[in-house]
Structure formats: structure tokens, C-alpha cells
Length: 340
Image (cartoon, rainbow, N blue to C red; front, side):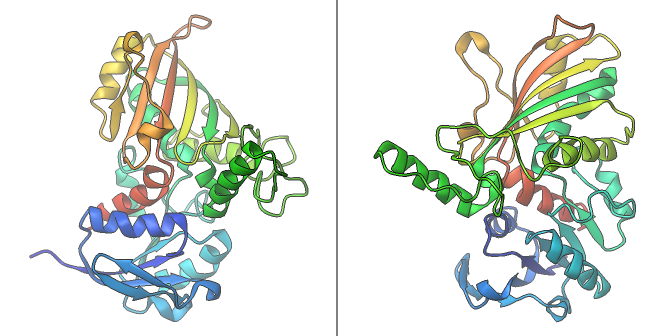
């Protein structure tokens, strides 16, 4: 007999929180009770889940009494405050913020890559950064076959990664620009930035805030998280992260150098057998992954697989995935499914 579980979604009114609810239903997660939680400003909102209406409750430590799984997607500060409270009350927390990702005591898990890490949890499991997830799903089978020597990533990240208000701003900017009206900027590169930019018909080479060495935090996340997930603490890896005027779906141009020879055909065959990967790679038929094709799909799409003739044992890949689903909500639910 299948056991059912009491589940809480923290940040239930946000883009990722709402998608978590959808994915829980789609994947038929065994739920006996569902609690939707958010900050005070979102409390008392009504969210329809299936055929039932749920009132959003203001989250507090007491919210997690009797909860088995708590999915957090409400920002790092709230996770730091309340994830330990949830774990203390017996819940398994799957946290989508960056609060615990680099904590040595907290597993950082991609189910297709390092599922065994989940069993070392002490109440909190971290969900990786969205770009990290799709990149590592692509890298892992190639590393197993020919050993990574160096990784260079350039991302093209959708505005949904900055939240639903940023998506609305993109849409409003497009309308204003095309109508010849003034364009308002508030959300890009991030809310509260000392300088903001138009994202409509533009590219912004910054995601999150800058650190002292000239990298922005998104780039640091990709570097550090990849090393942790793959247990390659010395892996030479660099990244440039760019916000693009796409509503949903992140893309990555990956350039990798391997220790051993691996042809494009061999890489393609390995990736075709990788769980969670879909290959779209027929240049003669103009077939390759696009963000629109990934929207609403849980797969990591890979195409443009070809040799890099400038180095020995080099490959280029184009990797695309729905950042709200596989990059956040679906990966979180998959983590919990490992523990059922």
C-alpha cells in the first residue's frame, strides 16, 4: 500500500511555487494533505489545486508541524530562517534558493546525476541553480566517458528566472517600445540595482550582483555548484551569464575539453541514452533546440553537437531547458521522489 504524505509549498504564489504545485499533481506525488505557504503579503490568497481551493497561509515555524515534505521557493533569507525550523519538526526540506547549496552538510542533488547524495541529508536538501542543472545533466555522461579537462559556458537566460514581475516588465517594455512610448526599467539586472536596463530587444551581461573579482553571483554559482555535484573540486570551469529577452527557457553554449578522444557521434550516442535528455541535432534539417520548444517540458534538450577543432579532444554543445520546470520545480519534486 502506498503511503501518502503531508506536503507544504513555501512561496506558493510565485512562479516556481505555482509550478511546483502543478508538477506535484502531474507526477501524482502521494499527497494526503497540502499546505500552501507564503509571506504575509500573499496570505489569504486562494489558489485552485485540481478541483479544490486552498487558502494561502502566512508561513511560520509552526506551519511545519506534521509536514513530511516542505518545498521552499521563497528566497534565501526566508529559507535560512525557516528551513531549519521545518527540518527540526521532522519535515524533509527541498530548498530552491542558494541558501544551503554550498553547505558541506547539505546534499546538492540532480537525480539524473548524483541521486545517491540525497540519502546523506540531515533534513535539508538543496536544489541547484537552474543553469547548473541543465549544464551538469549534459556534462556528466561525457565526463564518465572521457573525463572533463575544462568547461567554458556562456548562458542565454530567460527573464522568468528573475520572477513573474520581470516577465511582466519585458512584455510591457515590448509594447511601449513598439508603440514609440517611454520604456520603464525596474527589474533588470535585478530589483533594487543602482542602475537598471531595458531588456526588451536587448541583452544584459549580468545576472545577480557582482563580486569583487568581476564575476556575478550566477557565474560563481555555476562554477561552485558544478564542482560540488560532480565531486570535481578542482575542475577548471568558467562561465559568462547573460539575460536575454526570452520569456522562459534558458540556453547554454558549452565548450568542453576532454582528456580522451570522444567524437561528436559518440557524444551524441551517449547523450541519447541519458535519462532526462532529448537530442535535437539535425543541422541539415535545421533541427536544434530552442527555448520555445523547451517551454513546458521537463527534458534537457541538446543539439549543435560538434567538434572544437581549436583544441585537442574538444566539443561544442547547445543545451536548452525550461528553467522553471527542470531548472527548479521538477528537479525539486524528483529529489523528493527519491525518498518515497
